[in-house]
Amino acid sequence: MRTPLIAAPMLSKIIGAELIVKYENLQVTNSFKVRGALNKLLSLSEQEKSRGVIAMSAGNHAQAVAYHASRLGLSATIVMPEGTPFVKVQSSEAWGAEVVLSGKSLQDCHSLVNQMIDQRHLTLIHPYDDPKIMAGQGTIALEIYEDQPDLEQLIVPIGGGGLISGIAVAAKALTPELEIIGVECDRYPSMTRALGCNIKEVPGPTIAEGIAVKDVGKLTLPIVEQLVSEIIVVKEETLERAVSALLTVQKTMVEGAGAAGLAAILTHPEKFKNKKTGLILSGGNMDPRILSSILIRELERENKIITLRLQSDDQPGTLGVIATEIGKCGANILEVSHRRMFLDVPAKSATIDIIIEIRDAQHASAVIESLTKYGFQVLEL
View 1 (cartoon, rainbow, N blue to C red):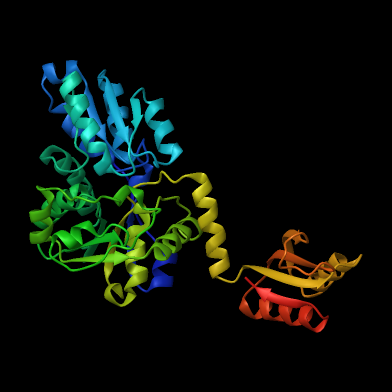
View 2 (cartoon, rainbow, N blue to C red):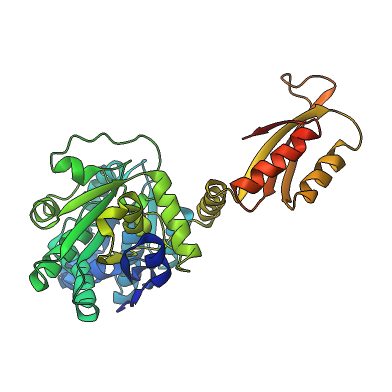
């Protein structure tokens, strides 16, 4: 699918850059990966097609291979890490692929993939380290150039490097002065480290599983080293902010990796100020539960929602008094929970946790002050 390239005036106003957005999250499988997968599958010999194909993927490459293999009448086996979001597993199975969950990362999947290739003589469709895959992803740059040839910067997420290397080759051939900027999450700064930068990865899971790759491609690394101007490493919190902003401001849903470009701008806004900058929304396969958590967390960061812990005597009518005081302040109670039976709460007391909806930090202070004046011990969690 030739995806649209659309200006983002509201985001541009907020950030101070002239943003142009490439909607790869609108592909059939909601990710750019369909481009490289189709290009590779079409290049196979008839014998390779008859044996079937295998891929290892955190989800988007899996769906792309499954989708196009189904269209072309090929059997496909996909090996995914065990923590892959359910939405990506189910989508791959829906396209007719055999899905095998194994290990905690793509690296863990590698040995199983090699075993299955030896046993069943399958053809590997690598997620990024393949010239056909890289060239397929590079068609994004061709479309961007046709629609917006005067871009000054183009921000591209980096996992193994297939997307950015394909785009960089095509974009630099058409516009040598275009600045290509890569983005990695701080949990997996693999390309940055491969290029010799002494940066430590932050332990823990990431919402950007689409770029959570430990080992970059042998073919992609020299291309990135030669053609990419800079790689920005972004924090997990910034990725969450970017996902929320794209949904609430730009009205489009992206996964963590798809929001990495905006996260880079939020990390270093001065670098993009007053520049005509292209963003690639590389994918939109976000687990609904994770998305809802991100939105709530962002409301908390913006002081739209706060959680208060109140301790008081355990008397009839106490909760009614609290609700009345909060209502007088114009705040809205979302959730209430009591804690009476824990040993850190006195026997004749109760601890009450209340989640409330407020306008801003000043409004939150007014609610806390009102409850404190009424005699409650108030702690903001």
